Amino acid sequence: MSRICFSRNLKELADLLPEGKQVVVLYDKAVSEWVKKTGLPADLSIGLEGGETLKQWDAVARVVDRFMNAAVDRSWFLVGIGGGTVCDFAGFLASIYMRGISFGFVPTTLIAQVDAALGGKNGIHFGSYKNILGCIVQPAWIFCDPDLLRSLPLREFRCGLAECVKHGAIVSEPYFRFIEEEVAGYDPAELPDATLDRLVRDSQQIKMDIVEKDLYEQGERRALNFGHTFGHAMAAEEPSLSHGQVVSKGMVMASRLAVRKGLLEKAECERLEKVLARCGLETEYPYPENRLLPYILHDKKRQTNYIWLVLLRRIGQYMIVKEPVDSFGL
Image (cartoon, rainbow, N blue to C red):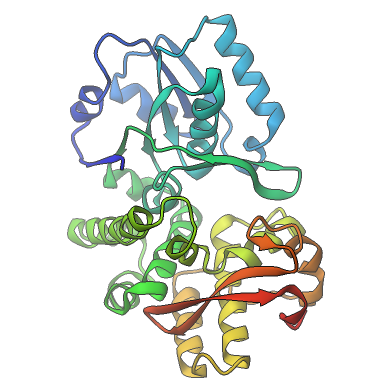
């Protein structure tokens, strides 16, 4: 598994670079001033426009062309600095370029620190279909500076909270309650260091505990897809929605389905919806559910006429069901 370095000391970031290797840095232009402060020695530095539009094959081709012109080879080390899309993109590129070069991540958003940079999943989209092209390759290390989260736009912080709420909802009612009582409704700038640190560390621990048991998603790791099957379908239908918003809506849709199936108490579903709303996340999907069916049929978690679906039994306990596609009530 990857080493996670949780630190407010930028010197520790430079110390993580392997000695004697040339370094290429891929970074989100939105954090270029912070990148300068790190003083990372880069033999090649490429700024990227973060966001979902980055995760397309034409962007991969453009960066590969830069790599080849700079004679980047398998002896180099790649550092990806940015939010979730930049980490996904950088990890994918490092995994496929010349059959793979070593890499590390510096996640600069909450969603990247608690989810995207962890677990080794690297991927890009194919048109409107999310993360269809990808691989599972672990970064050598992940450097997380929690103070970076204080400067995030509120919208970006809320996107990350969707993944934190998901982690609590599937396996940890105490962590869910912590978010409910000490995080939901607060601006990140208002949170004490200890609260911000726990928010990130507990989510990281939950995700990595699951990943270590099931790296290649043959069983338990599927739990991390709670809300994502429906959410990714919504994102394909409405590309303007952020990842956090579609995951929030997707968790609500999955939970309402569990209530209809008699698997989840309505009060538990309402508790989830209330916390998401207090986190500034959307919970309604103002269009007919059957509009999502074409995208669900192309979901990478589908197997023939079935799809693996994550539902809740209660807050802190999930179940995975193999559901016929035509039984979703779509």
